[in-house]
Image (cartoon, rainbow, N blue to C red; front, side, top):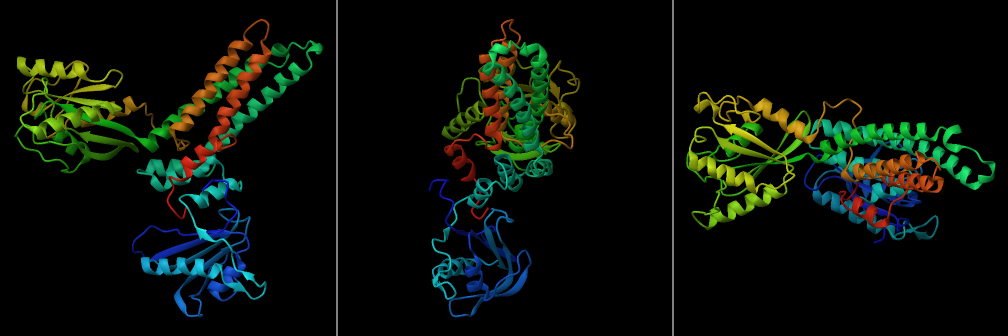
Length: 469
């Protein structure tokens, strides 16, 4: 279905599947009152909860609960919205859903027409999509709704809430307003060249551009922090067998997630856990031990090592674990060096020397971290190192949630502003090129809030929502 087909009424169960004390069936469309009377047996006072039966086609009660009616445009979607809040059993919810679809084709005696012709099941994210299409929210706020639902940390939830309240959108709109003013001045100068107005000097274009670029840099920095809160960092623990990788995962997670034994090669497959450090989610992966020559003792270990290298290839950071009790062994040190040489270029690698409690005198290893996964000594330094790799700074209250596409759009806008600054610095002004760079920067910012968005982008965003939202 095209995202443009939003005029037909829709219905869905708006609460998660499974049992619950309360379940909600939500309907959105235009002219819902005939359906309201068919289901509730009477009209409802707008925005006031009304307790009563939800009736089947014969007037018998399917369930008793609260009904809420929100006439458009003062509703979540901008259309009329009906919510039936009943008991949260899956059978009850399906009965109410089926009753809505059935009642929609019943004839309303007052109008001699179907109560709500065309009512159909909603697709994922369609309620929020309609809120966007009816100008109730912009695209950044719509994405913030999904991010608030999916938030894995308290900091992410609070930041998503700020984005939903419009904090991010207001900053983007402020940038766009400044761009519009600059574009107006440039276009006016292009339209009336005979006036011979020295635009760059009299309109202070360079100063305005510099101020705009500086403001955009601040928003970009906040967006990076917000994207980190949402998406986190993929961290892979790698090293030779029995270096203490599973012990380190358990220590970071504060739980016995991976099996730990003195036997080398205990871990044969990836073990993952998401932890949080100062509100930043870290997706930590413990991998099977690596060997310099890739010679495995059996097929299972060979597959485990292959999966380890695959995980390393997709990591944002690698914790390369060394065993302090064996670093003086020439064969072991040579194998460590061979494995380190195979690590992907461009991926930050943190060299961590483990088992400090069993190797007296190993407290210092240059810039490398020394710790004991067994006792916990040195773990805090490792946590801070991971935050530094992520580029995290202590989150101020103003941080809003953001996505990678927002960061990319801001970077694109920044690039076009740099181009505009270069043209503005030329002696001849190059106003036509300056105007084009400002237009492209304006469009890049517009993709964040949805002012300039392709249909396929909208479809990609909203299909990732749950049904009923």
